[in-house]
Image 1 (cartoon, one colour):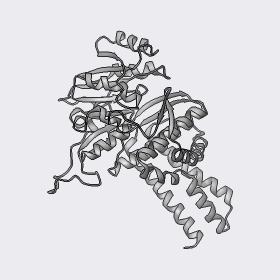
Image 2: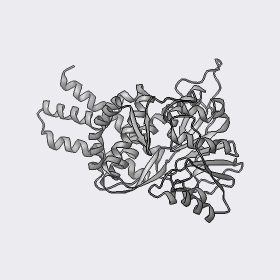
Image 3: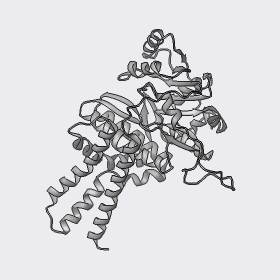
Image 4: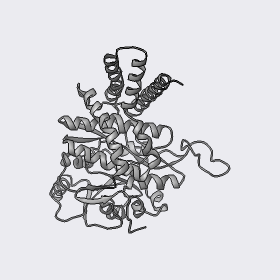
Amino acid sequence: MTPVDIAITVCGLTAAVHVASVAIAAVRCRARRDHVAPPADAPPITIVRPVCDIENFVAETLGSTFRLDYPDYEIVLCVASPADPVIPVVDELMARHPQVRARLLVGNDPVSRNPKLNNCVKGWQAAAHDWIAIADSNVLMPPDYLQRLLAAWQPASGRQPASGRQPASGRGRGTGLVCAPPIGSRPDGFWAEVECAFLNTYQARAQYVADSIGFGFAQGKTLFWRRDVLEAGGGIKALGADVAEDAASTKLVRAAGLRVRLVDGPFEQPLGRRGAREVWRRQSRWARLRRACFPHWFLPEILTGALVPTVSFAVAVHALGGPILPLVLLFLLAWYGAEAVLARIAGWTLSPWYPVHALVRDLMLPALWLDGLLGSSFEWRGNAMRVEADNPAA
């Protein structure tokens, strides 16, 4: 093949994959208008919410936990330090909703190098029910949050193979965990819009494609467990096997021959104001964690985004004697236009300047990939951490 043939092939394949991924995510994430009613045999559920410090919209996101349309659930809020400034917010919410069973547990269980997991241990152990949703404090829960989690929990499809082994592809496996990636909403400022471009049309899109072909990954914003599944894998302390509890959850579920599934139509994370450094540090942390926990999936990330197909397209146009700049601009508008269609169908935030925000995102991707490849430490809520976890519970 000539260089032109290679450029045309690369551009064509990446564009086809891009359009297919947008179509898959649009089907899975289309805006929901119907409220999901609780099932007649709705099981009781415990919601464990780790809280730490004052975040944007924290009163609203935590308050949404108290307004769920579900007949039988309890809330266990967990905070590590008795001096945490979020405690008065939690106390006020519990006082305002006395009809909802809720309690705040204070203390820390150092079972791992993961501060969030250490904060959650007491909540898991105190949970009264066998269905347990662990949800970050910045997740905004719709009234039918628990119904939608339950609806995604599917049994194994078809007959069990005679060998007793689960299908390698994951498509026929039973559910071991239900999750939902965060969808950025209510951005305030340029860099918050860029973060929406990362969270929504890039990362959530990729996760729904992986889930749709049977290779779903856990996302720590919401981890919906059936107690026996996690206990069979060693209990909540086993999630300290990796520095990220969602990576450890993915490996634990797959080792059990089960599948991680995503909720159709993920849940909001209101962002508010964001700065460039804040966005970079968050994306850098996630890149380093992906490299450490799933290196074989991380390495191909350098090929994602619009950079490789755009360069290939420009090479082909140049070789064929066409006008490079106007055609490249049209190519980028079509590329990001497909993402904008996804955001519109899904009901996600969409700025008229979305192509600019997405272009900045894609220009950051190679640097983030290199940072993730070479970096080994990060800071999370004031805690210095390394991606290679030194797990005292192991």
